[in-house]
Picture (tube, rainbow, N blue to C red):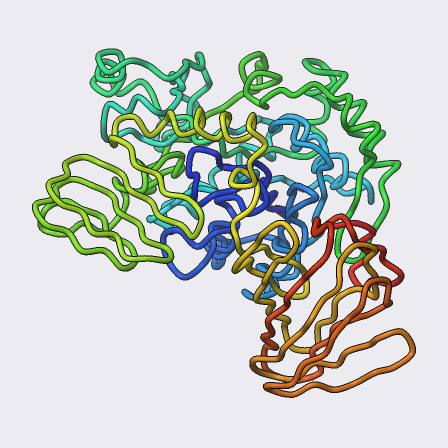
Amino acid sequence: MIIPVILAGGSGTRLWPLSRQLFPKQMIAITDEFTMLQNTVKRLQGADNLLDPMVICNEEHRFMAAEQLRQIEVTPHTIILEPVGKNTAPAIALAACKALENDDDPVLLVLPADHVIENQENFHQAIQEGMTFALQDYLITFGILPNAPETGYGYIKKGEALDSTLDVSRIERFVEKPDRDTAQQYLDSQAYCWNSGMFMFKASVIVNELEKQAPEVVSICRAAIEAGTQDLDFFRISKDLFSKVPSDSIDYAVMEKTEQGVMIGFDAGWNDLGSWEALWQTGDKDRNANVIKGDVIVHDVQGSYLNAQERLIAAVGLEDVVVVETSDAVLVSPKDRVQDVKKIVETIKTEDRSEAVNHRRVYRPWGDYETIDISNRYQVKRITVKPQAKLSLQKHYHRAEHWTVVSGSALVTKDDATILLKEDESTYIPIGVKHRLENPGKIPLELIEVQSGSYLGEDDIVRYEDVYGRKEG
């Protein structure tokens, strides 16, 4: 049997400002109504011999990952939480060591959570071909048959053919992203595939090969799994151990060195959506080759990508430009310079600005909140609590809060008292009062919170009880 391993870590900085550290691209609905994580899992439906997926994500994204799987009625095999990001080799080592815990030796199908694959039938066929060779102890990487001289992807050169009827070959070499002329040579030669970052192998085989090629990676990850603990729907690994693991890609750690590497090439309408230009390439275009999302009005605009999240974008006389608007940031860039967005994000982080980390809307396991207004001594938030959800029992040392219900009903705990608030009713939470907010109803609870005090930081929370097991955040 096959366990899909969904790699859902990363921060997606090249899709800023839509993608943020605490709300990265794999958790966002970019191409349709489903998030990229959801689409990665959904496209496996109908494939043979697949078990429930194993998801590996950053600890900060755990509740979003669990909720998004619940929304598409998928129960994961497990959700492994990485306390720090350490690239694909450690992530795969964690998955393989976890899969081997019960003396089973499943085949692992490793899939990044930020890809688009349009031809699902070809994808499923490639998985079945991969199963055949993985059971022969090969390490499979999936190559995408190129249809253009793409300079944004790495390439893999085909070696000796292993099957005369299938596009299956040994791996001759990996090559980095080429310049335009070299990419055209690769395309013309028909000897290269794009490196998709998707893999397939038996758990025991990848662990054995890691022990040969990157022993420190597998030894630390094995120890981190052995010291790990189950926490609600999540498996937590030791931060002290995992922080010591080398940050290597599986290509560098194993696939470029192993003698067991095999590439299966297929055509799948694939894109890794690594930039705004990629979203333009894969998007539905108007008669002027523009991709338009949201409330956008254009005049004499060609070949551009315009995405309005909150407000109207009005554009005149643009060509080959990307414009992305969110509630707190706007990106404007020539389409051929969008790879440099990560430099903007680095600058924002250096200046310790919140726009690199959060949107104004912040997601929590119980719902979300959005900052409407903020000043030195007050802050106004719009809070949404999901039906039957509750916030932690907590208190604040530096701020008081005033809650007004806009829709739904709120069950409010204040020290030893409990009150039920309906629409247009409000209550006041003084500084130092132990309190909790719950939604006892069947529709979302929406309320306006006005905070006032000398310090309004999110770390001014003392938790006494939390159904989600949180101590902070």
